[in-house]
Image 1 (tube, rainbow, N blue to C red):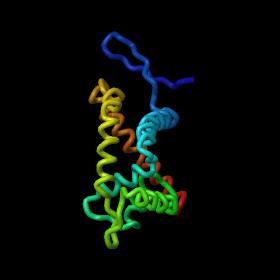
Image 2: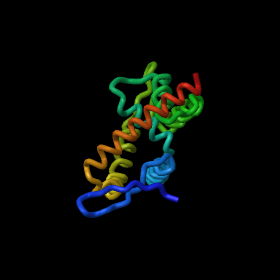
Image 3: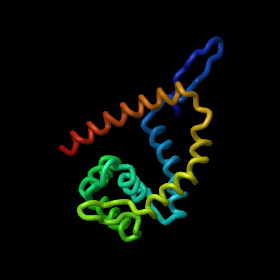
Image 4: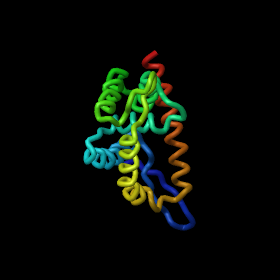
Length: 158
């Protein structure tokens, strides 16, 4: 059974699905499935892409511990698993140790650029045509859900 909310616009009556935890999860996994399909063509996992992106987008060079903390914050993953992911990225020469820091290599940056170019038209089809006010509302709701879930997780693991 789908939960719906009624909205009235002028004289028309539309029934729209209400955002639920299940709907959010299904949307996440559908989008992630698309990305994982593209990543698999390049021999990279979702977790590896998240860690590589963290290194590439950092404002300053990151230590392994800083990258672990950042990726853990995003994925809620076990630190040992994140360290293993960083090791794999180094073995693939997508990250390289330079002193105390891990830096993305040119190959790592090129990989992210390629994946971005391959997913851009798909993202345009998925997101295209959604009214700006709907995107703004969804953004507010998703931000609030993320904040609350992070607070609940922090309380559970304290």
